[in-house]
Image 1 (cartoon, rainbow, N blue to C red):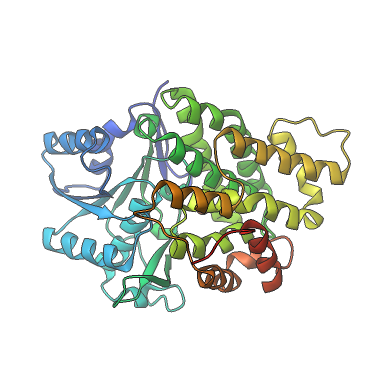
Image 2 (image 1 turned 60 degrees about the horizontal axis):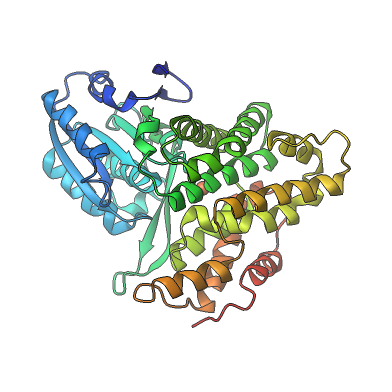
Length: 413
Ligand SMILES: [Fe+2]
């Protein structure tokens, strides 16, 4: 396998085994830079995938500052701390190494560091700034997961926390096409150390992106093509990536599939799954990919009356010859294929199962969540922009019914 470079798709993509080791070449694109800020997750900072890149940068005579401590869903405190560090260091370029959390955090840091202002000033409801490329710092993303596709995304959600309790109370959304990283490096060697659980969850996130962009009301031929190819690659490779994490072909295919699915939804938008999962991830700390996976089959069932024209192509991308199936059968096959994949990669099919297992296995960390959290998530879902792209109109009682099904017999605190 060789390294491929695509300059404007929608940014510059540098892909292939060993692509991350070209980091100095990528930094050189932006002129005489000496000070490089690297933003990464706490759990990654001492791993060779990060330390090797820092060594390469140092050997390239770059002065580096490493900012870690980004939590799995970045908070306002994470972003503000990072901005302060980047300011003190005087960074000339920002490099994010990690999954969606580190890259999203770096995107927000770039906005605040380049333009000043508070997170509220940058919130999409106000959007005081133009985010011109000439003012933003150069931004390189190196993905270490295969799911969020944050390396080709324009926006990020930063959790707004209660200053007294530290608990999540909402989101700041920062988004602009110019906040897409200038260069995204997709190197399968960077995702080899992902655990089977993380591989499964991030892969299901990518699958949800592909499905939701495909059925979105904003879907159009280019996003259709991207969605279908991503679905095909995920169904062909996710099981292997989970069961045999050292399989470089499966890792490479999943990394490209995740980027492809995000390029699709950047054009056509997401839907009801992401609308509901946002709150559950922020308030109940259910990993984004897991929350999406659990919501996906019931949302596919809910959407089915309005997605009939697309399901034949979706199941075909999943590897099923649907030529002679009628509408209702196609719907059942599509949902069955997703549930069967989830079973094979060990993802629960209800929040009751997931949360109960989590509370039993880690009682020192996780206690039963309250019913308020579910209600707060349902209300938040109705206020997201995702709802507008969903193929079927959604009411609050529809969201309540889906959540009721997925929390059946759960014992709330
Ligand atoms: Fe997602």
